[in-house]
Length: 439
Image 1 (cartoon, rainbow, N blue to C red):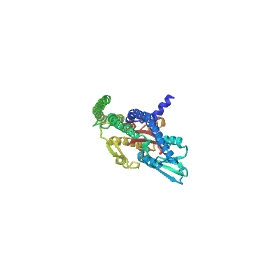
Image 2: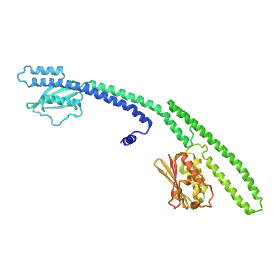
Image 3: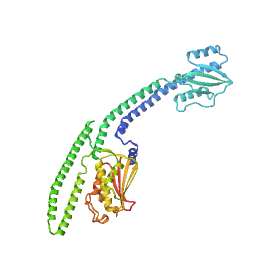
Image 4: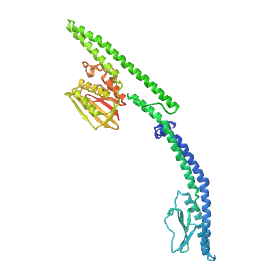
C-alpha cells in the first residue's frame, strides 16, 4: 500500500526541482491561511453575523408589530423614525403576493443566518433578496392582502471586517509566494545551468560561459564538473596527439616495406605481402578515424537535408535515391555527422547494389533511414556490430574491406549528439540503419 501511494505521488508531483520547492514553501503557507480563515469565520465572523442578524430581525419584527397593530397611535411617525434613524425604507404594496422564485444562496452564511431568524419570526410568510442590490437587502413580508416591503443595508447583518480580513490574509500570502518564487528561481538557476553545461559537454559542444554559482553545495558541484571536464579534455587531447605520433611512426616503416617488396623478384610473395601491408594501412586509418572523430568541432545550426544533398556529390553515379521530408534544422557538428552518414552509405554500397536515404520529421526528432538491398545482418547480431572491430564474415561477406569500425564510429557520433542509432530489416530486404536526432 505504501509503495502504491508513493508511486501515486510521484505521478502527480511536478518533475522540476523549482516547482517541487515551490510546493514545499507554498503549501504550509496556504494551509496556515486556510486554517486561520476557517477559525476566523467560525469564531468571529459567523458569530457576529448571527448576533447582528438576530438584532436586525428583532427590529423588523418590532416594526412589523407596530405597522399591524390597529390600536397603535402615531404609527406613521414611528415608521418615519425607523426610516430616518435605522436606514430602513418601508412601504406597503397592496394586492401583491410574495415572489415564488427563491434567490437565497446556499453557500452564503449571511443568507443562511437571515433565513433562520426570519423563519423563526415570520414562519414562511417572507421573501428576501441579497443579490439584486449591491449594498441593500430587499425583504418582503406577507401582510393581509398585500406585501410589506422593507429595504435595509447589508452592513446591518454582515460585519465589514470580513472584507478587510480577506484583504489582509490574501495580499501578504501573494507577496510571500512571489518573494519565494524569486528566491527559488535564483537557487535553481545554477542547477539548471550546470545541467545544460553537462549536456553540452556530453554532446561534444563548447561549455564557454559556464561558471559555478549558487549555494555552496551547488557551487562545489560546478567546480568539480569543471575539473572533470578539464581532465577529460586533456585526456582526449593527449590521446589524439599520441595517435598522431603512432600514425607517423607506423607509416614510415610501412612505406619502407612497400619499397622493399617492389624490389623482390618473387612477385607472388611480394603481392601477398603487399596485400597484408595494405590491410595494415586500412586498419591503421580506420582506427585513427575512430579515435579522432571526437576532435573539437564547433556546433552549428545546419539543415540536415542540405547536408545529405551536399554529401551525395561524392556518390555521383552510384545507385542512391533520396527521399527527404520537410526542412529540418538541427544543432550539430556538421563534419562529424557527415562522416557518420558517409560511413553508413559506404557500408550499404559495399554490401548492396541499391541504397535509399529517407528523412522524416517526427515529434521533436528527425529520423534518418538508410536502406540497402544487401544480405542483411541477423537480428541477434544487431547490438554486436555496433561494437568496435566486430565483423560478421558469414552474413555480410568475408571478402569485403574494413576492420569493423564503420558502424561503431557512426554509433559513437550519433550518441555524442544526444541521438540514437538502431538496426532493422530493410524494406529492400537488406539492412536498415535508423538514426534519431533531437531538435
